[in-house]
Image: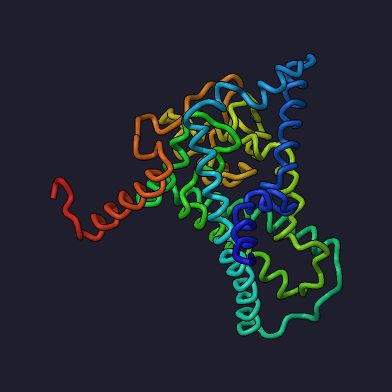
Length: 327
């Protein structure tokens, strides 16, 4: 009986996963994003939206019935079960790394000053710096996925989506789902470790790693709209600071001018700083996908297996275990 209970709990994990308040996949964040979309649409159009038009705006029938969306859903289920295993590993490594940073600083610089009690100033500064670290870790991970040929083979799974819905966020290979949080966690440790070492863990009123209020602002507004085809733009100075839905539409565009652009998560500042920013013009239209047919990435099995073989060939050729065509 215990075995059956455990098996049943495992099968229900996706529901449990979407009930975690400190997760960007918490189900109310999707509802909040839908309400945010309606509000933005109402402000732009300056007119009332009928229930039918509202539902079609949030859940376009032509996108939901698309084969690309159906594959997104299958990969979402697979991804959630994978994250159940990955979360324990990544979470543990992050906290071990924070502790390692503290021990290293103590070895190099001696004992830190006496720990202070709860501090609003320290917590606020920590929250901002951790938020910026998360953004940089995500931007850098994303850059590697695009610029390293072997990694690009895995990231192509995500870019093979021909239409964009919030489910497309889950259209990822397990290796990619592992790489991003590991590198983001290391970026966070480089900030959070020294702060905890110097001020002490007791200075944190709220742990900015597990409950960063700045990140949550995006979770409950436009984050889930990144993978949508809603015509919402941010231009001018604002377009250099945040990632509006159109920014990420550029990222998925088949136009070569848009390749490797807008790699940020919530913010555009690292793209702006390192020259990977493309601020879309209002009314600019996009088509999505790889720009060519890749039948291997049109199934769940192919999306999981093909990148491994392709990346393996690239690595073997790199180290000359396989001869190139012009060798």
